[in-house]
Image 1 (cartoon, rainbow over the protein chains, first blue to last red):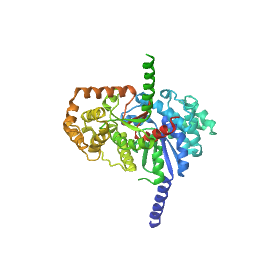
Image 2: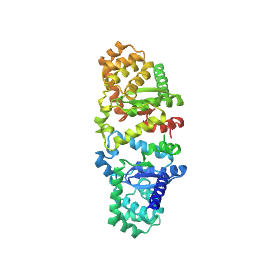
Image 3: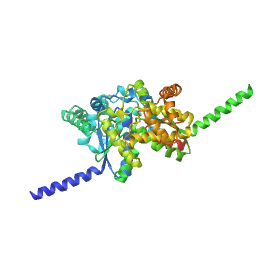
Image 4: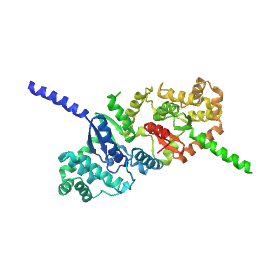
Length: 218
Length: 218
């Protein structure tokens, strides 16, 4: 019993340690700011010596709790956002075309990433980039599972396994639970970053996040 | 006529030149992010060799056009904002207490600043700081014109002139027109900064704004 308690303690320390060695990014595939965040987070992680934890999120779940909606629909704010997105993309040299985000459905893509996170984590970043770039660089629409399966195959995943995974009730449940857990954790936008339990919302908070990591908070 | 046209041209050049030599800040006195912006904008302006143009704004006018409301009321977002405000204030060493912003009315204060901008521009920054700090450092409520007049007197303005100005129809009209012009220009939040015709929304965009100024855009 004493041995088991000690092991529990060691495990706790290890888990805490591990959780400090990563930056988490919550992102919605229909979110253009999420796309910019996905292009910038690995550079930040590399400079800080961290791993990236990719967490697909469904903004609709947050909108339901918060009573809000997509900012692109909001007069004044939507116009500003378009300008801000293009300006931020230009500053960082990120290829970017604002597609019709309201034509995009993100559930199949989010399920595919939920699957790689479980079964092929080494492919997760590639798949996230392939899906996002398909929409925000090439102007494609990834709403259909068949399209996502093509993109998965393009990064070396098995096409049929990807298709099955998107229809697998266990994957569907897992994504639903992940999204609920995210909302419980306070996620309400895209991208939202976590370092430990400290949340940072938006691409425009990434510099502060990086200083926070470097200084260990303040 | 030729002389007049030439003078018109010279005037245009001078005006454009002058407009490049300043950074504008639109702020609502009930906005805690506006307060943080007011504490940070002069440092930015000094580093960039610019003047600050203080522009009182009434968020209600933007909410009417955009169909939005104060984010502090929004579930999830409000909790995050509180944390973010305190974290940003700590990072920059800005004294900050989140008061009950819904108890604040900003019209009298905004009229007083509209008056100093016209009649005592050298006092505008002092008055803005006095009003904001009264609420967000001392926890005071500046809703009443009498309170604003006390604050005006505290920075060396004539108390009776301040009171008269807040009741002066010309000042009331001027503020209303300024706010309408701001909405026409696309202002929808607080703080919003302009450098020339380039808008930057939020304290979290001030670093990008500073790079934009330094590089002359991109």
